[in-house]
Length: 247
Ligand code: GLP
Image (cartoon, rainbow, N blue to C red; front, top):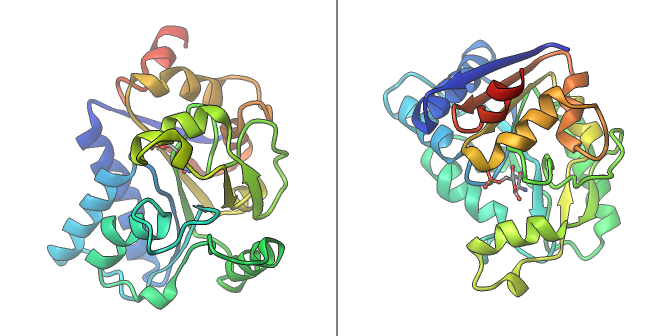
């Protein structure tokens, strides 16, 4: 396996280090295709990228992006849709042309057609240069819950009860959390040229250990990363607790 593991003292340093990996990619190839992610973990990293462009160190005007996932039934009108998240935390704050940003359409009437359209979007960009990932408590990447095979492209998934519970904090109640999502598959993610996973906090320590050091198994979707040839993992000390204890 070729996972480069970076353990930082805290979330602030994690965000800066991970932003540095993406910044290097954009400097080397200004029209890079970035695979982007939502969730609380990458928020600090996005803030760093915004700061770098404001300081004149980075230029997003030629960058293209594809996001991992979107809730079925939510769109730009809902503040918890992933399109809203991306606009709030990144797209509305940088020079990227929003016509070059892509997410699955949570309102698509024909989900099968939407899945095919999204795979074609990724293909039309010549693949993803670097894919950013968080990790769910179930070990999910994107919304690929335990049990998914590692070869799938974009698909529609049922969310795991643990994920619904974890994401309920963003909605008025657990009942309001959508039950389904459209997500890039693990196969799509594995085809990215480079992967960058970020995780922080003690709550992620056990699953991060299992993903990076446990058996490679669909029971832990993020364990697929062990099969990729170019992975950078940036975690803080709290998320590294179990790795420190057992390795
Ligand atoms: C969400 C997203 C994932 C994200 C994960 C962890 O449901 N679909 O892409 O990585 O769960 O979220 P957080 O970073 O808030 O812990």
